[in-house]
Amino acid sequence: MDDTLTGKADFEDIYTAPDPRPYFRTLGPLDYRIPGEMLPLVVQALRSAPGPQRPVLDLCCSYGLNGALLRTDLDFAGLTAHYTGADLDEGTPEARIAADREFVGAHLRGDAPVVRGLDIAAPAIDHSVAVGTLSAGWAEDLESADPSAELAAGIADTGLLICTGGIGYVSQTSVERILGCLEHPERVWVLCSVLRSVSYDAVRGACSSYGLVTEQVPVPPLRQRRFADATEARSAVEGARAWGCDTTGLEDDGWWYAEAWLSRPAADAEALPVEDLAAAAGRLAA
Ligand SMILES: C[S@@+](CC[C@H](N)C(=O)[O-])C[C@H]1O[C@@H](n2cnc3c(N)ncnc32)[C@H](O)[C@@H]1O
Image 1 (cartoon, rainbow, N blue to C red):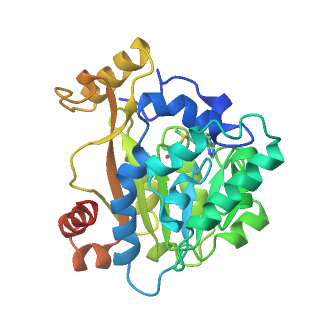
Image 2: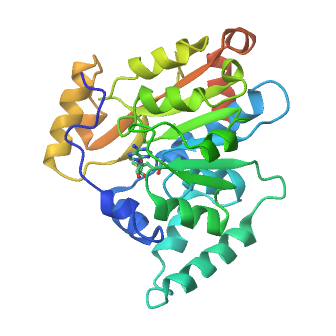
């Protein structure tokens, strides 16, 4: 069992382009979909966390796809259609960003939540903040360094920390450093999708050290994307089996699958059982 992404194809180039077009054009054919799969759970977590809604922090946010889904009326298909359209292929980077800003702005919800992002890739953060999929963002690597003073101050009031497709790229080290910035780490909710070949134990431990209780959200395994090649297929199947998962009808059929994990204060977990939260998210998705 592994807590990293051994055997996963290397897509670093698409995470560091000036805009998300290479991201969608590379991952689209692989049916990439985890932000959309997680959306009902994220929305339900935002609604269910007690008290006034507090800002979301998206760890490994890339081009702010979770921010786009939460802050606009667009779905994943709408985002994909925009970013894979051929109309701006010849334009300058500035023209593409202006077009993306106009597109996002036209779809922004009146009650858009505050969604901030953290990613190692500066171009992805710059694009997301420029076009409005993120309210604010920071390009930092908390695996290797403490947060800057700007990041620490900027995320202090976070109420919901999310991470889709990022655990394995980042570990408990980043999560611990984020929790260490919060005014109220003992009140935060942490919701992550985690590939079935990747262990969540260490992140669970980091949350537990702040008194948060971690539960697996009882939903069927979530499709992340199709395998890019045979090496991915082998490592996903072997990794999931090593973790005790039955891969029949799941990884065996060519897809990366993830599970959703939720950490929150014990009192919140008692007040709203995770089964009820999953059911409410299922009604949102229906
Ligand atoms: C598979 S993508 C997931 C992107 C997005 N969350 C989604 O669901 O589409 C992984 C992201 O992790 C970021 N990443 C990798 N290492 C990181 C680190 N040490 N700190 C922050 N982000 C990192 C990459 O730049 C990339 O944007």
